[in-house]
Image (cartoon, rainbow, N blue to C red; front, side):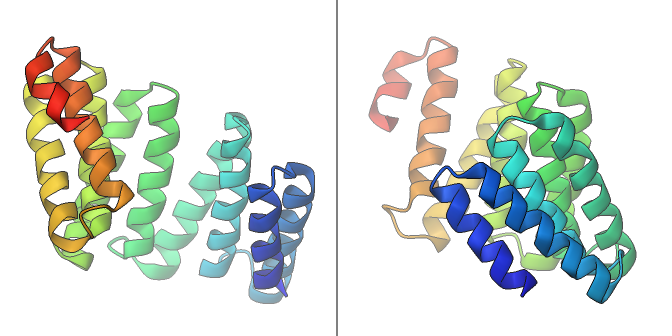
Amino acid sequence: VAESLNDLAELYKLQGDYDDALTCSKHALAIRETALGADHPEVAESLNDLAELYLTQGNYPEVLPLYKRALEIREVALGEDHPDVGESLNDLAGLYKIQCDYVKALPLYKRALLIRQEALGSDHPSVAETLNNIADIYGHQNYFAKALPLYKQALKICEKVLEPDHPDVAENLNDIAKLYYKQGKYPDALPLY
């Protein structure tokens, strides 16, 4: 039932019906907490789903405790090097990145990267995602020399494991182009757009 409620919440979210999505997501969380216990990995999944709904609405104060609790559950229940822990770290870092709190985001992304590389392999799309996120932070801080090789590494992974017209490939090309643009390197940026 909880899984169906999560799916229904996602459908409501896609339709922009956030009130019904929140109701379903909260109900799914309550069911999982009652049936499985407050520290079960599926509870962490429901916490992440609820957090993403609040994130979509820009309600960051609601997101933070949900992401933190999901991370804590996953670390204890699954171990600190589990891919789901990497996902939680990436999510929490993403929240901090949105809020321009790069000091908090960067170490979380770096830890997520190590976990994902070890658990999923260096050529996994999730590794590319985290590399791209770290590059974003460096780019926002004008550390272009640190950002560019990470963007290029992420692009190389995406080009290797995804179709050429996959949105992640396009996003990586666009990120590199924006970095060049930000540096005034317009001839380098133009062909990537």
